[in-house]
Amino acid sequence: MPPGNNRVGNDDTAANIQALVDSLMKVVACYHHFSWCVGGSTDSLQLRHQLQQTREKAQKLSAAICHHLTFHLRDKSLPQEQRREMELLWVVFSSSLELLHVDMCKVFTISGIFSPADPVSLVQTGLQGGGSEVAARALSLPDLNQVQTQALPAGLEMEERSALEEEIGHIDRMMEDMEAKVNVLRWMVEPRRPQYADPISSADSMALVSVDEEQPGSTSQPQSQRSHIFVLVLLFTVIVVAAILSVCVFIFS
Image 1: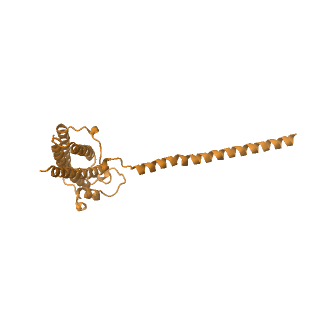
Image 2: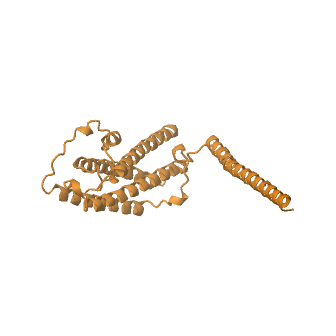
């Protein structure tokens, strides 16, 4: 194969892995959003079902990404520029996987305390509605709202907790296997893509600086006004006291 075609094929592979990583980040963000609802007033059987669907989607994406990145990063003939690209994707992927693992552990702990079968025990956070729209966009399931989970089957909650515990162990083993096969130092990887760069542009930073420069003047202006008023009041008081003293001297002299 000519070198040009090989470069195009590698670029396509990097783009495909990038798309998978972006999808994983969306799914992990969706799961992170749902994890804060467990044990609250919006906790329900439908939420637990959405959490399960989100975990399954995240694990499928993680397995595919881990396979591709491990294969490319262990390739000694990979060009340096493409290796930097793969290392960057590896850091983003492993960070997303760690966030997913933390949220799964949090859901496992809280779900053991609060049960959707007992709404009275749930914490009344004041939130209303569900996150079906968020999950539908992240999982590409437009009919997610149609899931009907009104009754809790016997033993289902314990089965889900056991399955979640196994999934947490699977994520643990995946992260350990990743670190054993690929040794990428995260602090040595420099973000170079626009989505990983500083979100504040130079124009925005200049605007922030100008706002910061204007704010001290705006706060000092009321203080100067108060100081002027204090001086005027003090002068008026001195004049009044002097007038009273002069009147007293004139009367008693």
